[in-house]
Length: 303
Image 1 (tube, rainbow, N blue to C red):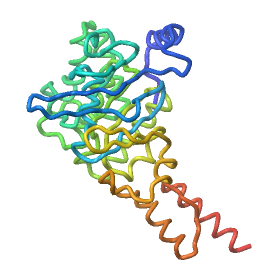
Image 2 (cartoon, helix red, strand yellow; image 1 turned 60 degrees about the vertical axis):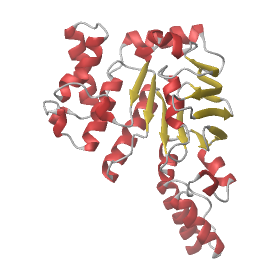
Image 3 (cartoon, rainbow, N blue to C red; image 1 turned 45 degrees about the vertical axis):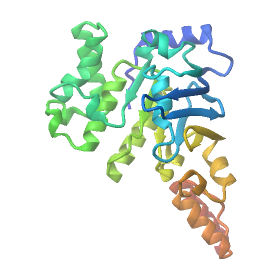
């Protein structure tokens, strides 16, 4: 992935660091919020404070309907809490999202709701033009993100004829074109085939590693968590944030995730089964870790 973020953004990063969120680079703080929908459905996102620090890959894991999307909508200022507080980059997004909107990129669960242009290129170009960027610079920004995401072959394609995986990448391009510091993704893997899913995860991890982009992902696919997560939150019920930690800490702590309407990761179940049969290969969560663990035991057995 080639460099594409502007010097201006680097300066902005440094300026914000000097201003300082806090010593840990905290960029999001949510303190026990309550929201009541028009049908009087009450969602209280409580238990633990929801905290995100700069550069973290944060996943929120929970079953459908537990409040994950409600939390994200509060971060974006789409919903305003009846009780509690939300801070993103130090401001209340419900009141002052305009101050931070260029710093936040979003990929919605239903990407058809956010793809607005007739063609892929037009859609990606829309955001910078809408923010008042002059056309020449906007075109440069659009071409840069098209190159990053390898969208050249489909940039002239009409969006209605895109596959599900292509639409997700176009939505991601639209979210990235303004060079955000924070990326928010709501169930981005829903409907993707395995190849598109792997490609999407690879892109997110590269953006985090090479550009320092912080991202927050909601999902219910347990097996994907170890591939793209530094910090994992478990959510269940109607907004109960009950656990925060590294994936290995969370999955190692619970013998059974059924109370969260979730299953254990496939590799966790496999290696627990092997351990019961007297074959202890540890507790790998990723495929590469599993391969190395088995290889290590195999090599030691041949000595």
